[in-house]
Image (tube, rainbow, N blue to C red; front, side, top):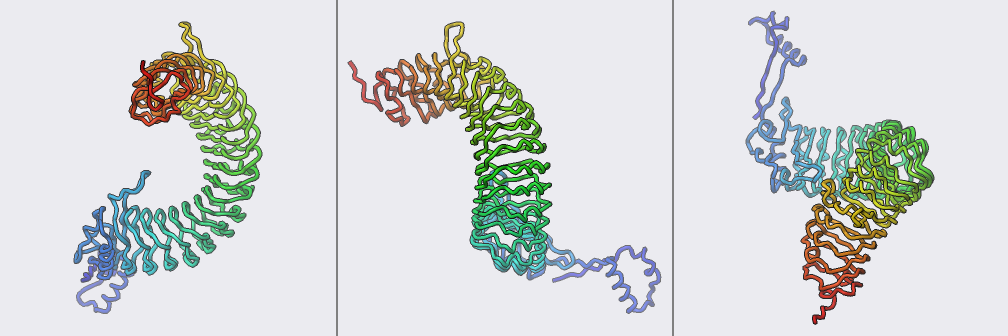
Length: 618
């Protein structure tokens, strides 16, 4: 039943009301009523739910098997859906349902099904002909197809079905939603091609999200009809063929994300018409050709992701014009030539990834001008020359990755004073000289200097550094001889240094290090990886290493170790890999539960017992 309320407000302030009396003709009152209605002084309020809408909502509820959100518990027949049904909003004048908003929970760890629904989307929702917003996000358990009947919702402005398990194809009937401004279908399991007709007349569409599905085929050329579009998100699908050549028609676009697809061809030249573009992500596709020099005209660009493609040619010099750029990702391509010296003009740059290309020449000395830079990755190229001293000016830097190049010269002592630094990956280069004593000031997660030409003893100060993962393997390092006659690559009390207590990985393999293994290594309670293969260590394996209960890998092969294998070491609870081959060990291998191949004990003439042949007891 519909109840009509007539509310007349502020009549005392309307001069014409003062002339009324009991003799005023009825037709005059009617005219006055209409005037007041036109002036919005009268509100018509319909309180009870429209019967058609109620049945449509109950039809949706019947399609839900489990309501973990507990919102649909309030959807009780014969009660007022406008007043008491959670997630439902009605127009106060017409009483028709205009919004359905049921939101689950999603964060960086995924969707929490405890806040969602399980079931299907009922086609009865197509009967909610006044519906403007349908918001069913992060419910996880909604399955089945998107009903064709949703195309009947001619007043719909917002359709959000993200983070569910919807499947099937996108219905072409959604192209009938001419008032639609936001279409979110991302993070489902939708498949098939996107109907060409769906974008023919969605002239009001501002946001289109299709990411995280299984959509395939070409991106429809009709996409360029979406003249109001500002955001296009279609990553993590299987779209193929080319980017629509006329994408430049979408002059309001601020964000394009087509990453993680199978798109081929070049970047369309028309893209330079997108003068409002702030983010362009085309990474993880099969795009080829050179990076257009014209990209420099996209003056509002802040994020440029072109990594993991087949781009060739050089880095365009016009990139210096992108003064607002914060993120530049060109990794994993076939880019050649030099790193432009003018890259220093990108003063807001925070992330610079040029790794896994074919870049040559030195690192520009101007690199130190990037005062906002946090992550620098030039690894896996053919860069040479010395490390520019200006790197010491990168006061915001967190990670410097230069591995697998041909960079030479000495390590810069100033690097150790970059207080924000957390990662140094310089392995597989041609650095020479000694490790600077200033590296004892490092408080970082990872220091990798493997496979260089570093020599000399390790500085004693290095034992004062806070480094979780240290790899100095494959260098001509030598040991330090202390006044006591003790010879070691590290301070004999290294394990007693409080600052070393959290180290996870210690790799010193393939150096000419000699002396005995410090017993204090057993005090490194967080140590998980200990690798000292291919050195000249002598003496016994310290049984104290068995106190490092987090150890998973112990590799001591190809040294000159003597004596027996400590049972406590071989029976570390978390031990997964153990190798002491090619030493001078003797005695019976202690009983152990870990499955270790015989090769891990081989080339020790005095060892016997499982998995080697049994010992011959006299």
